[in-house]
Length: 181
Image (cartoon, rainbow, N blue to C red; front, side, top):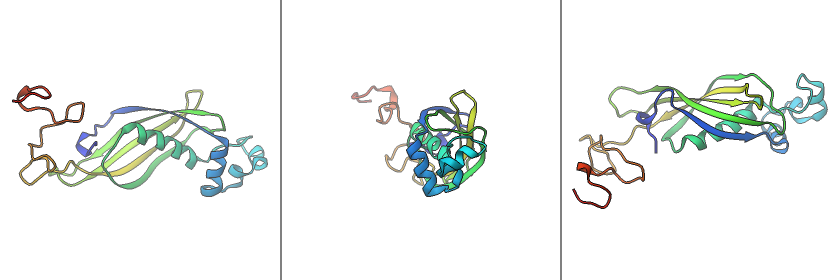
């Protein structure tokens, strides 16, 4: 699990792609953004979109889903909302967005114990490579639990000891896995 102190401003993640599906797009709009332009094909054809298009909330949900799956398990305590939403191009059924994300802000309160804010900027690129949507997702993120003695609360070892790939604690003194120090 990633904690606040593991997050680095500028760390970027390729989040894969998301397909704009006509049925899902319309069902989302009916429930969450019921403007005629998003739910009525005749209204969509008469709009500036000139054909059915996705509501920005649907595009955000698609992109955020890809981003959250790609960044892995982050110790999010609560959602602080969204900011800086920019919709630059309409999305239509059949479009496939390339999604990328990066940590754009990490706020660490002094003392190393209290949680802090983290902002993940998420961008969905239209099929032609242009940014279609960009937004900031803000979360309150926990710090790694520590005991009053400065040890990792779950393992009783100094807080500076980190895990190596594979999930087991990195052995002390350079001993390899399965060896004794």
